[in-house]
Amino acid sequence: MVEKTDDTLRSLHERGRVAAEYPRVRGLVRGAGVAETRWAGNLLARIGADAVLAEHPGTPVASVVFTGHSTVSGLVAPVTAELARHGLLLRPHVSDFDGYVFDLSDTASELYSAKPDAVVCLLDASVVFDEVPVPWEPEDVRRIFDEKLTLLDGLATAFAGAGQGTLVFNTLPLPREWTAQLIGVRDRARLGAVWREANARLLRLMDRHPALTVLDFDPLLGADLPLRDDRLGVYTHTEFSPEAHAAYAREVAHLLRAATGRAKKCLVLDLDNTVWGGILGDDGIEGIEVAGSYRGEAFRRLQRTARQVASQGVLLAAVSKNDLDPVREVLRSHPDMTLREDDFVRVVANWRPKHDNLRELAAELNLGMDSFVFADDSPYECGLVTRELPDVAVVALDDEPALHVEKLLRDGWFDVRDITADDLKRPERYREELDRKDFLHGFSSLDDYLRELDVQVRFADASPAELARVSQLTLRTNQFNLTTERLQQSEVAERAAAPGSLVLTIRSGDRFGDNGLVGAVLAHREGDELVIDNFLLSCRVFARGIEQACLSAVLGHARDQGLRSVRAGYRPSAKNGKVQDFYPGNGFRPAGGGTDGAPTLYRHDLAEIPAPPDHIRLTLSLGGLHQ
Image 1 (cartoon, one colour):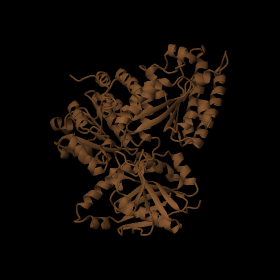
Image 2: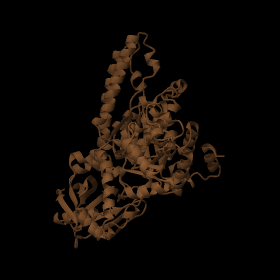
Image 3: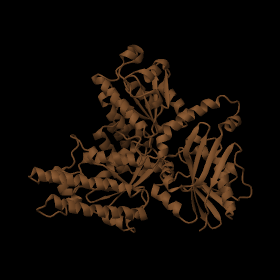
């Protein structure tokens, strides 16, 4: 008998073991139902982040300020639970009732002093209706909403100038309480139009403010999700029901997961009874269900969804217990298939355990296991992958294909704030990378391979159009990320504009194609020393000499600018251990640090600068460092 999630956590809590065994919590909460998740959130919020960090110092923490027009303390527990599902801790700061204007407009407020990773400003209809006269008409609502949009625009501007991280607004759902007060159907329609037009303008504020995210509340609401609990609303000024808070908390957690570099990168699909109906080995190509029947249309819906997700830069792969040739025949020639072989970066069909195939796929793509989402209809396969590969996010489908899409999309595994041009090219570039690895097998030495690969690198000052991609690299790169500092686009732009600062981009290509913008170096001048704030490189281009060539260029540039030394730091994380010797391996000497969470420091005296690898064709365009 499988123990229920709340009973398991309750048992840990009664034994005082939740903090000590926190790594187990992610798996326990991930499969919990609504009531279990609510119970877990309350428990974990009471325990707090510090108790867990005392036992597991490396656990990532998201510091979040909750503010708004109404009571927002009800968000703490559900956000705690949702972050726990992704292995994150919450350090919450809850503002006073109706404190959002003061919090965001006064740069000396506790909100800014907390230096949070995100500020969640929860908005609701009372922001507007608290100020409409009685009696009121739709035009009164338009006037007040217009004023509030101007206010929110100004608050976002203030945050961009003084804050850090992400500011989160949300659209304002319209409760029936207000539409029902208008007895004329035409007036109700006018109010609906006014409200939707204003929310559309609120959503478009994201276009003006790079640090702002506006979450659309309307798609979260359904027949089983009440927007408001009237007693809580009247007596405690809590304008959203616990169910609505939970749905919103899930979206906030997705955003925080992406902001801490934990968005997933690869969707791996089973095939039989997942992508198509039936068992290919038993039913044959003609017997599988793809379209043209009730169940077939459900599978086509899943295929269309997977293709849409992949079109935005998510890597799509298949791992199936099947013979490879029939699978390829289906993907290449079945007339009703939406997904084709070219949509996948890799199709793996054999009779080996799926967790072994996933490990090999991760090695081929040079991705960590925590980059994968695996979807399968078999409880056995899902359970085995969960046990053997706990970092893989497993989507357990079942024998009802009509529910496949909802289950696949429910957790927003691939959500990011923005999609860049490099994202859209990612699948093609990973396919090219697999071709490179096949090419490598034809050489007796790595040096011969690298010479024939013809690696070209452009190392230059970041252009304004590249700042979003640099921000994304800081948010999503985990392995070659020397200090793990996460920066929003506005923060990158601020650094690029600062005197004595460098924001440099690394672009690479080779005989197989253009890799795009694959890395960045952020640095600034302090007196007669250059300080490298961070060095980032995509895992797709590791071990080709690109990092050595760019570091050599940085050192040479510092010397050319008349500086005496270059200082750099390394802050360890669970993912970047492979680069801990990067600086000492390239002529840097220890320079202190490394205590109380500070990075270990290294210094290069610029006396002997290593030459870039001779197989790299390096083009430089680096600006000055004048203060």
